[in-house]
Image (cartoon, rainbow, N blue to C red; front, side, top):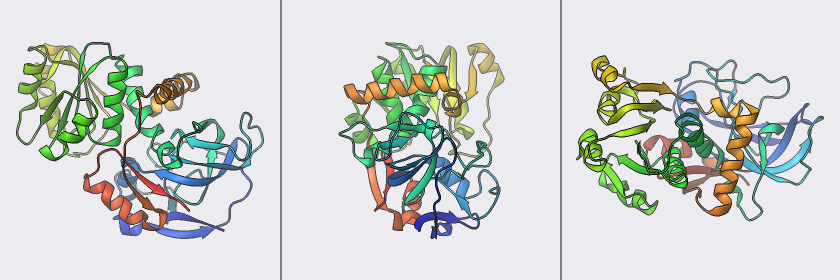
Length: 340
């Protein structure tokens, strides 16, 4: 028997429960992992609280990003052996709006053991801890998909990163710098400016005190940013349009503000602007793109241009508290749950 996290109704963090289930042998193309650490992601909070609608069934399970040890290998799997230390690329999910079909077991990693698709498991660097390994793939694959794959960010150009102290925000800073771009980061208050400066960010806009378009114009000499990367959406999108250069793109990858986004079409036409909603699955579900992303991230980890920032860890027994902390938006970097 192994403990896993389930929920039987939508609601706050308190709906998360630890339950015991028996794990079988993995199905075709699957691995069974002994989980060492779990990376928490904002999508899981939105799902648990009802933002993606009701689960397809109860009890429902969560999680697609973890690190652990291979315990058993299903038929058809090559390149891995029992005892290998791996981390999972989150190209699978239980979220009803994004759920990927599977003919095997339900793949969800909140627990002491987990079934995962073997194609989404990557061997960890030898010296890396489970905690660090669980904090890699969602954030760096999300940043890569939007800024490298979609926007094709260029050396020497400015990129505006809003809400930049999230795990994806930190990954976006490092990804931008790794290709030679210059990040301009926003945060709501002075309390997180030091953390952004520690990432080598020269330009930080404190949105409670400063106007984004005014500051972007000052920093860029009036040109604006060709690429804006935003997890907030909502009523602030109009301001971002004012900070965009002609022919630029606003990429929205989250919905921290669920209110309608109001855009002035006259401004949009004048700037020949593109507003695109991006999803990491654009990269993760296409084998060739996923392979390029994996190579990019592993090289970045090896040469030190990419380095996960861990804000806080919680034991599995405190999963509700970990979700509550993630919802508080106090964190800078990744929130990780340790197992065992």
